[in-house]
Image (cartoon, rainbow, N blue to C red; front, side, top):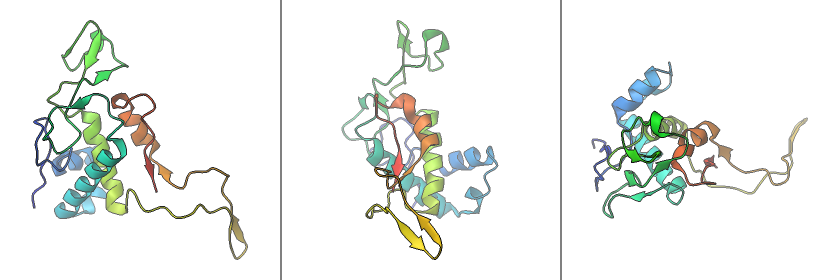
Length: 178
């Protein structure tokens, strides 16, 4: 089945924020060797999984609100104010009195790029694997591993956390993976 990409139209059938061509270009520009090895169906599946993960991880954390009650994905959104820009840096051409808003009919490049990065990770394994109990001490032969009390049981995607930070409510960052 062909991947249906959200372009800012608030589609009721969209499945991904990024097209395979977007991801191909993104990873080509970064000399990534793993992505080109995937088949097109595998890339499409990974992009769907990435978008699903972004929705689950951020649904209550995105700034603004959905454009339509019938749109399939969390974006596009209205009322997303970017705090780290001033009016002289307004690359969107949309905003007033020094307030910069993401246009309600676009998907920001950072979201597309994050979708690509999550897709690469999804192609290698589950983005939100089930959690097991926390390991406090494990010994195999002469090697022992102990974790700090309170240490998280998941991987934190710090680079993606930083990429998406402008689009999140205060305190809304911290992407994690089990």
